[in-house]
Image 1 (spheres, helix red, strand yellow):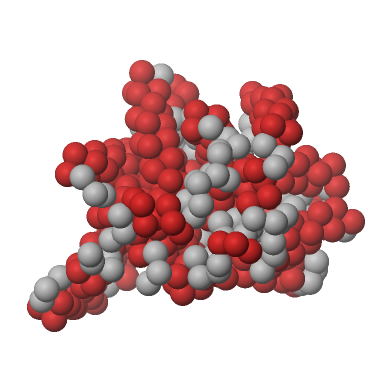
Image 2: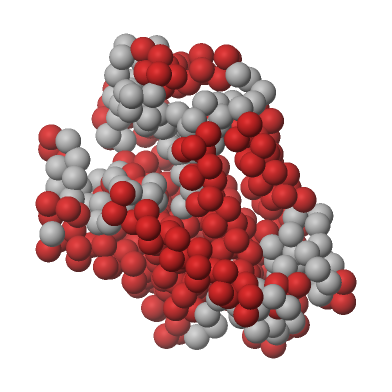
Length: 415
């Protein structure tokens, strides 16, 4: 049997069968609901229902949660988030948002119980594809609520999401995840369904009108297919040469354009649609509290004196996030929190890379997903307060593949 594919029985040998705490329908509902954050006024109260559901399942599956592997990197991040209440410029807002953030962490922990990496991938792709389809129908039949933008972009799809960028990011992660699942599918019918799901994700990206989402989807899908092809091909040298030629041709084409033409193709202006000025303003804000930051989600609020002062650095034009995930985490949690937050994600990537040879079928997904999140956060703020973070926590709470199973059944191990 090829080392690149594991039979179901072998996959189950890696993660012992444990009863699920969150059944599929409830886990899917929580993923969909968390995907449409930031939390809007219309669903504030529903979050407390989610907390009640989670509490019920914790009580029901208390013994099962002993199989959770709780990494120290996640504990450190959660502890620093909680401590940030002490110096937040808006403690009430930070406390409210942290309650949601800890709900994300708890959801991820519970979703990991009874599911291996492949099960989590299947749950995310199936849920994501259906939810994308629902949001596209919602935007089509209710354009006043499901479409939005400025000027010529007023018909961009956003569905129930707060804006087109959040919808585009979700579609990108689902499309890329569906490609990973299609490549590793065991049956032709399953493979076809996964490719269809990837197509629905790409359609959602296209309808969102998000240039970042479209660029990331195309780039990551090509890299996945090329990378897996290099591993599995009987003639990897020819495939590698073809890939190099494609990349070289693309690079030459980009170099032939001047910067304005290139940015026009990507739907950007020379200042990246105002991002560069925002980054300068946020960097000035970080310099005021470099170590601690201003509190979790405590900034970029209307009528908030601190936010208004920082907006003055941007010529008085308000912005509601830093358009860079690395800067956003630093201004909210300080450099200490940024190191803890991104350290949690990078350590998960390193662990997944180390275990890729042991479980290539299951570990390929985090190896693909995490760099996508890192790259996306160069120009957007995604992955820490949405469904993706639940997935990352669930993946992190699975016991390392290189660890003996007999040591993974006592209460909440750290790493």
